Length: 123
Image (tube, one colour):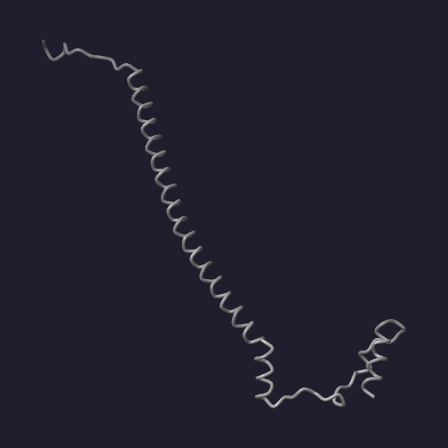
């Protein structure tokens, strides 16, 4: 055989097409795998964030309960009376109580009867 007598083989277009399809399928599989990994990473990050928010919520609820107890303690009538005595405040005598007439509704209803009864007690 001489140099000029080499065999020439034509490529089959089906081979090229099947190679392209195989590469496209492999590329799609890789992209799908990467997508699933990305979704899993996002899921894990959201789980950590949810856990942190639940911990913060529990801490806030505990703090609110402590503050409610503190407010109730500070508003207790016995504590208020003791604090008033410490400041020198006393219960007013009957002659020290006056009704502000501009704030008393006038009329013939129950409010007027109440005011009339109260004025009789004050005098």
